[in-house]
Length: 325
Image (cartoon, rainbow, N blue to C red; front, side, top):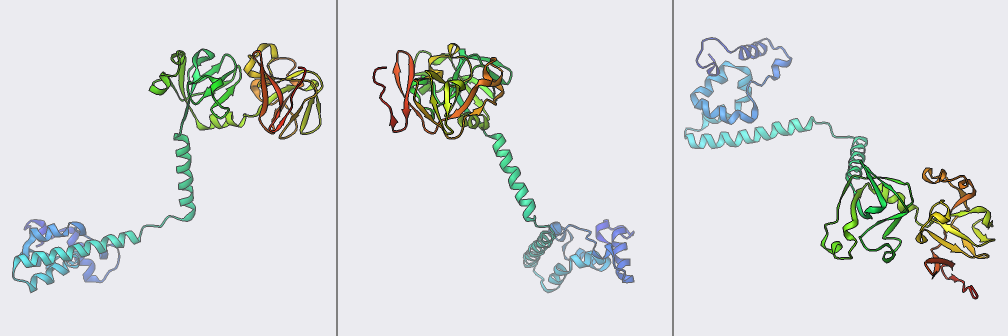
């Protein structure tokens, strides 16, 4: 009787099936049957001791295969301590061989699946990233999940006044534009709270990085009333006094920081040709939008301040001194 059956005269069904398979020489699933997990074999050997080990090996073919090494060691060693040490070492090696055998059967990921996993990870990282900035609260209408600009305003890297910041530190947003947001909160940074008395009216806003990139792409973008200019390809020449505007709104509706006065006769150098207005938030402002053109400046404008307005005097090193104006 198999000691695993706790002394019962009935032969363990799995052991009997294994023995029958070995006796008939049949090959199949039972030939590779493992009655006891290899990684737990050391505990079984400790429970059986030397006498019980021999009985199990004699009665069960499957267990005989698994316990072959401990059975051979028990026949050579009389000292129980040495026997247990040897059995422990053998079982560790067998467990390692079993693990290596199972690992060899694991399919190695293909290059395509690895690339797909890498792309998925990059997509997840992008979706998890956020950007934050500051807005002047009274300029915005707060709605669930979005901000709506009530007037031309700025998305800023700090709560400093907009005229104290460079074009890289502030991004223009025209009237009516809707900005999807992830989160909104009060200004809490000690360095920001100390800047001026109007910091408390600012809000801190978290958005997707794509929103910031879209606004950055609009830097250097202006609108002009096309009939006021002579188009020479990458150069527009003012044929009357006119304006460069940050939006297609009527000049009388804009704040001074949203437009630059362009005197008659001055050229404006562009990165490309003037193009029709395509932005959805600009196309329907009034009935004369179709007479406007969007332009991207080849270099930042040079201006001089007169009263509260900026006056265009050139670009880059091409500064023009406007005598008599």
